Amino acid sequence: MPDLFAPLTTLLGTVLALTHTAASALGPDGAVAWIIAIGLLTVTVRMALLPFAVAGARNARRSAAAAPAMRELTAKYAGKRDSENLQRMMTERREIQREHGLSTLGCLPLLLQMPVLFSLYHLMMKVSGGTGVGALTALTLASATAASVGGVHLGSRLLAGSTGQAAIVLGVALLAGFATFAAQRWFATTPTGAGTPDAMTNVQAVMPWLSLGGVVVGAFFVPAGLVLYWAFSNVWTLAQQALLRRVLA
Image (cartoon, rainbow, N blue to C red; front, side, top):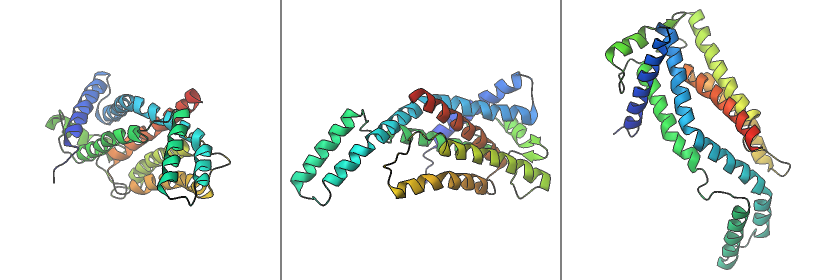
């Protein structure tokens, strides 16, 4: 089966090679250079995706503002399934969307980000396993696989090393988990109001905990390099959500 993300993964591998070169030029080598390189890669990619994130946040806030009118519309036409009433409902729905400036493309900004995020996942899995991608040469990969902090390599698994090594990986995983928890719990782009349905309220209350648990549990099954990327990416998301909440308020 063809790897649909291969071209993008290759491009990101070249970006990682460049960020590692830049990190090494700053003076650090070994594990520190790779930590900086992964951080720079995360910043580069997330900056490129920022316009899509802003568009998605704006549409989410507008959707939240339009939610009461949408609920009233749904109640107004409840049980009316004939073609005439359905047509009227769709016309009124479009009018509400127009009044609130809602994009008809909906989740497109989020969907456009997904291939990049999946490709980053594939890249970190490959690099952590010592597989070449893009401009990452054999020498560069040898440096990546040899680099370690406290005995933890990019390809290390949480349960495969000593207690001290596991503590390092788990600590990074907890940082990543609490960052995504905070982003969803405190800086959600879509505010919940008094009219929010109970089911949706319950889902929004549980999701931060599920995300935190998912990151920590996932750290048991993926290499440390990917956990490190999660930490950088989730901390970025937390800061981005906080900034967008302030700017778009």
